[in-house]
Length: 217
Image 1 (cartoon, rainbow, N blue to C red):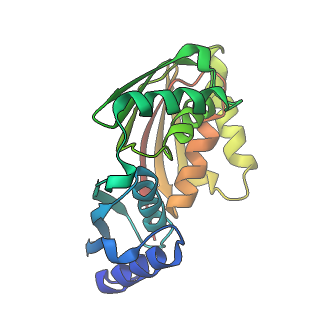
Image 2 (cartoon, rainbow, N blue to C red):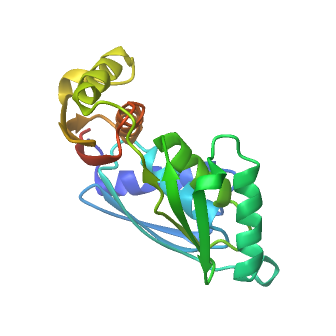
């Protein structure tokens, strides 16, 4: 098992490995396997990239993300310009039900509201606007509309976990409360945890996931 110093170095190396990041802008501290990221970046997409890089490192049990987006003079846009760009981005994304999504922008922070049938549509909406110049953050408040019998949700998810070569299904406990899925157990990495969540969201009818998985190394 890695000690905190080695884990810190591995995270710093992974940040340097990502071509869109300037690792010198991001501070990394580690205590008992918990990684804290701090500093300033000039775009929201870089903030997300830094978090994703840290999650790729083996041994990271949790992340505290304190990175702040500070736009340069050339990147400043008013809320109206950001809203117009966001609307265009949603319209051009075939995975987004743009006619059911509403956008609000306040001080560079984008709020997405409305309804979607699938989690991938909700994720696609956020991904479509996160790279827009001037965006400082996103609140994805899109609600999911259930379209399946809740009695089959748990069965579908269990089968999906068992099919996946990247998931140790025996370590995972799935419980459903209506359209909400509660996931407990142990994941071997952040990548496995993300794959478990993806499998759960892929079941029709799931509107909420409570992820209580522990990352073990």
